[in-house]
Length: 441
Image (cartoon, rainbow, N blue to C red; front, side):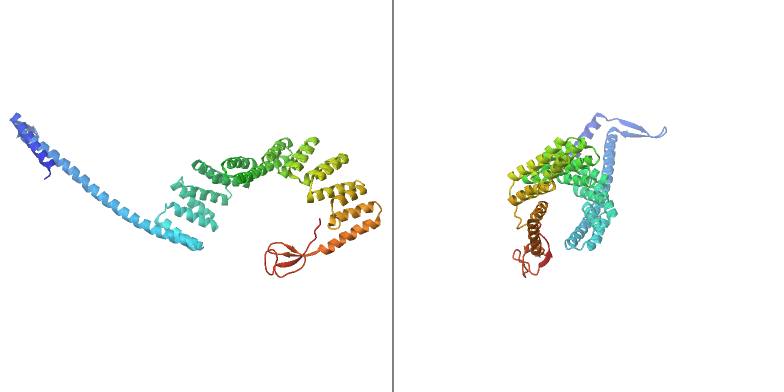
């Protein structure tokens, strides 16, 4: 008997004696009008206490028994769940090993067994759905991933897998909605921005793709990588401008091309289209300015060819000649040769063979290139100098005959003048093939 019980018993005994001393008389308890019971006050008091203790004991016992059976039920359920979890763990490892070994078709039934044992196994739902989608069963994959997201609404792997399902089924609106949920959960990672950009590119919504690209650039670290993404942004803005251009909305297209150039000053396409849009809008001066800036920033003769076409159509060939001469003066090596050929061809088409001959001979080597030889032959022909013209043609013919056959390595693409068993550049054996071709410089 515990000390607490002894003290309680003594307290009740003393309380009973004290109560009996103060209340020596009897109490009548009437059960009916004819039947009553005479009890001493102390007996009534002790009986009441005993009855209360008895009732409390019965209640406590009932609750204890109920709790015992409840605990027994929970213990059994926990044991069964532990057994299931161990079995699921073994099956999951087996499935992962099969996938790692490349036996995906054999892994799929194992994942199905996992879901039979544990229908709400989020990783199992996600992995099985991914494998089924890879096998071409997008409908079943979508069903599994929807359930995984329902079980775990904030599981990023499940959400990304669901977005992949929508992408595979070309459900772009649903894919964007899913990616929007991911973005709310993971605001710092650029991964979701890459995915959103991909969706906009599929739908060719260049404006939204550009907006996403701007957000992406702000989160990218590294100067070189950031510069690459800025060039990509320039391309998206350019594509949006082309859309307006093709719809005849030149006033809206022009600012888009200018924004594309601001993001990447070497965007040749944007420079050319800015000039084209300005010309279509009736502003030839702005078109020339755009093409000139394009050449200064990219060194591409394509801009000069646009300018040449404009000057020729407006009867101002002399101004184009000045542009070509200044460009040749400021250029070097192969660029100088290309510009000289363009100027020589312009002189030739304008009936000025002497200037053609001069610019070609001063800036190119006709003895080593076919195109300069052909231009010279045409120029001499216009001068009625058959001997020089014939000589230039023979020189071009000789170069063609010497270059018409060449040997090329099928491994590295290097060219050779004669066949060898192994490529001297990459040491590839048996890859040297005879391929006809002409160097038209």
